[in-house]
Length: 306
Image (cartoon, rainbow, N blue to C red):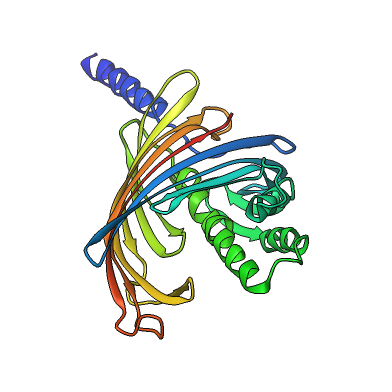
């Protein structure tokens, strides 16, 4: 009899453990549109020849993702920007640009306005990884074609700035921070898993994140992340403002992400980055001896769906 009750007890325990398993993934509907609103506030402190220079940058954007095809393992989506804005507070003053401005003298804002409502295509796996981005370059080409009166050198500078903020690699890195978060198996509350992604925004960095299923309520699952960030190739120089530069930076990132229980889409995410290190300018005609610039960057981001 005791063995019989032990078997029943064991069965109850196993059933209880099985019930606690949760499958965390995207479960999007074909034909449905999902929103993502981003608000990023970065503070950058550089030490140039012993003089501290502070810069504050705010980037905001509203995007829509329309599911065109729902495959077994991924989704094909049309993505479009619905609004875009960028502001910078520099020692020399403040600059503000917005797709909602109606000022023909503000070329940068006019280009942002042209980028609105022009869809490009992505493929996103059910674990939130972006495996393909198509036609985002056409978005920029179409926007720039409306401003043929702008001198070629000025246009090249504007295009370079926009590609850094909104181009294919920057888009993938920024979006995957809050979509490429799902494990490849069912998990229980408190269980962790590791995800590797890349950050591309002026420099290339590797992000290794340990995510944890922290709990749930009736509306959402809560996932928290702890990340390590490091420059992907600290010896590689890239062209920036006409000068070859390289980055040697490391940092940490913390994430708190609420995802909808039905769709897996983000309800709200808070992401905080702290990065520091050195930027090196290679010797060039404008700066024959080159320069080392210590830098500290703090970036607070929020993502919502409305």
